[in-house]
Image (tube, rainbow, N blue to C red):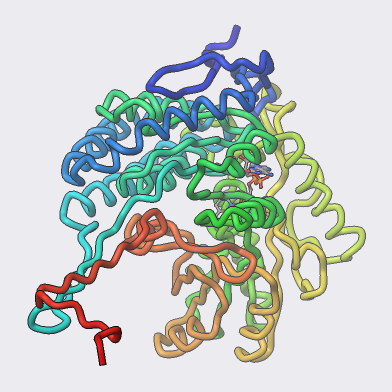
Length: 499
Ligand code: NAD
């Protein structure tokens, strides 16, 4: 038996690991070699009901716990996450197929940063309302109240980071949560629940159920759930938001993108190429904010492609725990098939010019041959109406689009139903801000790509989502406002006085 095998995952509610009553389970695999990692027990509807009941029982006390006391518990969890970074990152690599060079430096830490940010925020009075003196003897004050029992639904690309980006503001605001990770990367969820428990989080405040879309659908449409925070595909998000709207639940939707990266003629070539590389091949292209439509001035064609072809040689697929590896497999067989079909479509139907990569796997050690690998791929001279240019592929597939004028580049960049991210590379700072002002996206970068710190509120425009995560704005989505007008004049004005 391989040492990579993990203990089975059951469910977690009422502060304990609980067996699922469905009698069903699925297996999670290591995408780099297709070996089985663990059995995951699937929650029945009765199990989801029990987890929700546990969160409902915990809500009155947790929501009334003073913010400073909640902050202390969350800070303790931050310390535990940082202490155990390497062991958690190791499991994340096995489960998601991401290189350990990434998971050990980004995935756990970027999640812990957000938990720390919100713990500090509430500990420092961030949940205080406003007081307004209306007139000498009348005041309006406002409070921020927690919503209740919330559901978090995760995608597979940043498993523990997504769990933390949802649970941190949720719990800091005084809500309780049922979290369902993606069925492709479920291993982190129980670990996080155990860390929260060890930090002192009361039973029922953070709970975990496992399963696929049917479990997610039962959970998110449950009448007790006050809010759904969802990360995943646009098509799933539309269903989940539709069902939530029917019960007037709050939603945050973090969905897909097909983001434009615009390089202006005055940009620095090496920076622009490095930006395009990071925006397409980091995490094997499985990043929602990837800049997969790269707009390049036509006059740059030769120089840009030459430099890009030099840089793409530094994409190093290989064993996940090798220090040199910076490119893993795709997360699952089904996703490998989907990305491969897009590459095939690009070559055979769109007839895009293949500059690098293409069908097949990169060259790999023998023990990785069964993994879900694809080659980093670059198409050039692309046209806006190609399927590979229009659809989110969510893999390492770059489309280069040449343009003649900046106005044209901006217009074409905005010509999409999606609006997650966008960015511009230029030395002209005035031009940079002008262009950013015209781009239809919720997350934008100037002369960089991809960094998403705790302080930065992130969320999509158009079909890429609703609401934001992180930053000061991110916690507002987990709170409801109560405004109170208090009159101290001693008389109540009335229009019903006797004439
Ligand atoms: P997905 O939509 O297939 O699944 C996401 C989650 O939803 C899974 O946990 C799944 O089990 C669950 N689910 C499926 N059907 C459901 C239903 N009817 N009701 C409730 N839950 C249901 O997405 P995925 O393939 O796991 O993730 C990749 C997508 O996520 C990409 O489109 C990517 O752009 C997007 N993403 C967005 C962000 C962001 O912040 N905007 C971040 C990461 C990933």
